[in-house]
Amino acid sequence: MMDERCSVIEGLIFLSGDEGCTLEQLAASCNMMEKDVLELIKDIMDEYCKEYHGFECVNYGGRYKFISKEKIHEAAEALFSSSKMATLSQAALETLAIIAYKQPLTRIEIEEIRGVNCDMMIRKLLARNLIRECGRTDGPGRPFLYEVTEEFMDAFKLESLKELPDLPAVEQNMDSELFKEDDIY
Image (cartoon, rainbow, N blue to C red; front, side, top):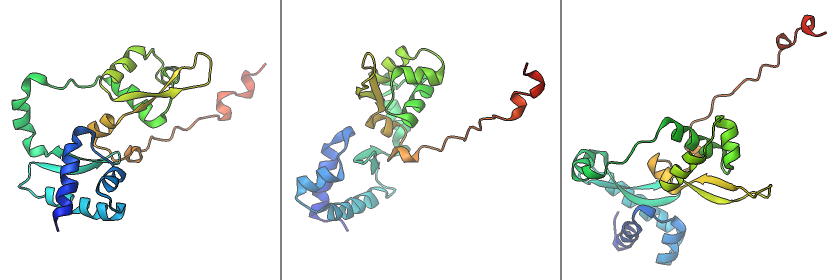
């Protein structure tokens, strides 16, 4: 049931915009217990799931925010047609997937997995704010480490990286067929 406290939480989530806000931030801002704020957020989410609303409250990457519902996307596309979002290339998706599954890791580690130079792709992903630098290694040259951002979580509608599909198991065949005794001199 929505009440005055819900309207305050709702307003704070709205004001946080695309960045969203965490449960901890909301609780601290309202001087409330996290469990109480969570109950209010559930009420807000339930309300905005109703058909007559054009947007909904979601939790992506531990951050609560409002997003538009799919039913308005065609009209929104018409409204903003001059600024269509570019799609990601296969190379960008591959690089992004490697970072999402193995983060944090360096450019060299990404290149070892992909087998090609990734310098330009990393720059493009950084520019689109899908990945970020998250420190440096202690190795020679102290290369940057990369991880995915909240914008990545939004773009792929993930609450956490645990929602990524499992990678297929790769069976390493070390059978004796690889080295038959006849072939050894």
